[in-house]
Image (cartoon, rainbow over all chains, first blue to last red):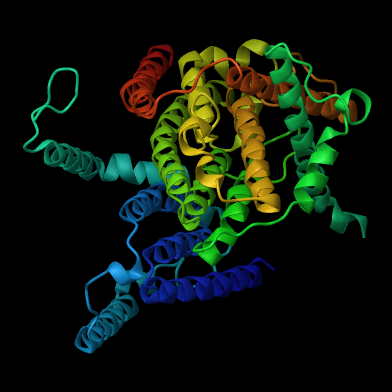
Length: 189
Length: 341
């Protein structure tokens, strides 16, 4: 039975994800786009669960749904632009160009996945739905991910953290630019 | 078909228990507040005011529902539900007794934190959609506050996971990540000194302070702060929609208390070895409920004792005090684990 449940969950979450994506790009009001983005992340997390990667599923919702989108929403609400206040005109030319670009990207990705030997030869992914064998559940477990991250890709992991640190320092510098700070932390000039 | 309905029994009982606890909690809050302020409190409806929650619910149901002009219709109606659902949903992974848990997920603790972190959308969208500057300010504050304190909470949690896995190694002689809430409670059972509060006292303090901020409770109730923002994010809500926000806040309190008990106070462990069978299960549920009620009492006690923080003080406490302390806690835990193992 698990296979058929997997199939039901997959098709339901895929439909929700596709509908959400359509809503995200068609709404004039950015708050709606942000909210449907959160729903999209949750639907997509279900796909990670079907692939027996619960950690990725949880982290997806925790980081993107619970943190990053909250910040996006914060900025959108802080600006609080009405749809009629947004001056930028969406011309037909731009619509056509972006449609061509997205269809092109879709074909490219589909072709890449279809022809990649890694995907087609992988024993796990060649089945339509995953069996609950120990090998499958262990591949997506927290231990396996931690091992990959800290043993195999330890250097890349540390470099990423430095990159993020640089971004934080840069952001702080930009907010303080041109404003000297006095010692008690209040702006003076 | 009793076997078919058996899996449904625990969710129904747990959810029913939370939903019936909330009205009593509201009454409890009013009575305790009265006692702290040397008043009598609500004591007219029923014996000792016991039926006051019933009267409140009837009043809320029959109140006129006012939808202000210029609200964003969809979000305005959706927000109260969004505020209420995540908190109730998070209870699925919390073990309420020995073997009594709706789902012992592999990532139970992370799941609970994740779901509670989604609760902020209800508040911020409610504030935004009301088309009211006070409500919008409340929603914005809630956004920033929850994001900031979630970081402290996550960092404090790392300490718990570290000690859990450390003791797991020692006892079972094998390595396996214990991120399931059931596993974390199992490791704390047996003796009162196995509880994580004794292994992670600093982490407990950080987590509990962050829990107050996550739930928008005083001294951190800046999103509704009636002295500055009228009613904050729920200024424009009335009748049952206001009640949904209210319900959401109280369920979030219960959930956070239950999560704190699970992570730091031994979960369902009463501090002595439980007898086998049904009696032991009952005692374990009782121990869990008592611990949650004690934490809820502290919530109320703090609310009516401490004054409200200023907004910049709140942010300062989160970023400049709690996050460095939480990082220090992780460091110390790592050093101790290394020296002991």
